[in-house]
Length: 280
Length: 316
Image 1 (spheres, helix red, strand yellow):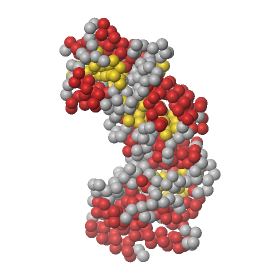
Image 2 (cartoon, rainbow over the protein chains, first blue to last red; image 1 turned 120 degrees about the vertical axis):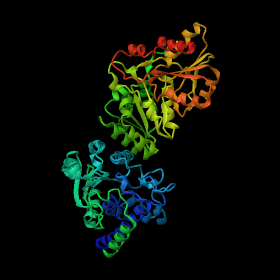
Image 3 (cartoon, rainbow over the protein chains, first blue to last red; image 1 turned 180 degrees about the vertical axis):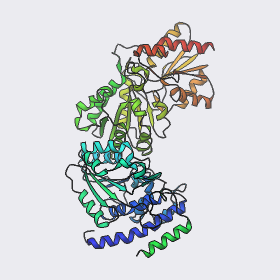
Image 4 (cartoon, rainbow over the protein chains, first blue to last red; image 1 turned 30 degrees about the vertical axis):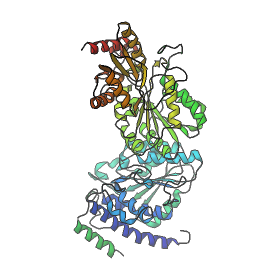
């Protein structure tokens, strides 16, 4: 990436994620079920991480020194699958087998079906603990890889997340990066309705001993800056609170609850594709 | 003579701590996690030998299990230790982050059953075997003495590639195996032959089952005793062979009779045919405070109680 300037990288990511959004929505409609809202809120960060930062090898996904990415909010997995396919982990033609019997593209990530998923997630609240174990192993073995874990805002209502937040700073895991995809919505309503006291989230992570950065999770300059910031070690785990929009990129999908877990109809999908095309 | 040795009885948790310290020194990949109970689970014995590889997680068991899974997925062999009841309470973390992940975690639950005594029901693991054996690929082990415990700990470090659960006692247990005896994973451990009735027991009550068999032998009854320490994988052929040999099988465990080894044996015999199975253990009731001895007497898990149950079943 060093040969590419920042504006070029941002332009590349902007174009690519627009196509990825279209693919994600197609995958979910083809499957007949899935989670468009949380996939579209998370795709920008995931794509930026995989295309500008992660040291990994799609031909050798279990390479021992790879950087790890765990999608703890596993329901956003179409965003991970489309990224892995674009990155060369498997053929893009497989994407449309999402959620079908026999497909490695399970409804939520499963490492035994796809090594690059790293862990089974989707039972919310578990990913940060597993990521922490991986980061701890790196410390024990004096390895330099980093471990990233992306969680949802609704997800961090789970108590296990705060157990993990507590112990990550005890172990000084500055090789662990948590990302909170704060899209403001969950199944039964907005975060403000369901659990308003989740805020102030930045202060909560700080109180647990984390370095925290709050960004616009759809601004690639901000995302790239945050990723670079997270690479500064310094003794503390890092948390990036990415303020995002659920369903980002398609006007009628941008809603805190409506498209949390509902596939677009064929007509809606055509409308969404047209809108994404025009966005150029 | 089988069942009688001069070695001082010790709890399987103590044998576990000693074995883990010994094996851990030889194997750098072993790491041990505890949730503020290392003095009770005896993981402290490892911590003293290998402080750099002991990870104190505080009173946060589900995080401990998830962290253990991450360590296992990165090539470590983690033992995650707490009381059996607190482990069972974090079942979903074990289901997803450990078992489904295929993470080579050794989940260790000590203080099994009513045998813990005075602390009462909230500290008793009485459902853990039932829960753990429902998980595909999960190995479930329960040793009956220190020799067997040490063999299992070593195997869990050097051979077993699957996630595993190890269930241990707080109370001291008499040694039932001679030096040089070798444990075979997945095999029923027949401690005593007999043709009238077979007691299949696991964990704390095995030594009492041996004493009960001795007492019944004096009454002219031929009683086999098998130690079911490898609960999963289960020795279906061994259980079937016993079921074809005797009229009645009495299972004995310090665990709810629902879901435990009695269920496991009954499931096999229901399919193979043979003996009638009577499940004996904690009869789907809550535990309570009392001395371990008084609780074993109340639940008829002492030698006298087991002998009574066997007599009743033979008379049916």
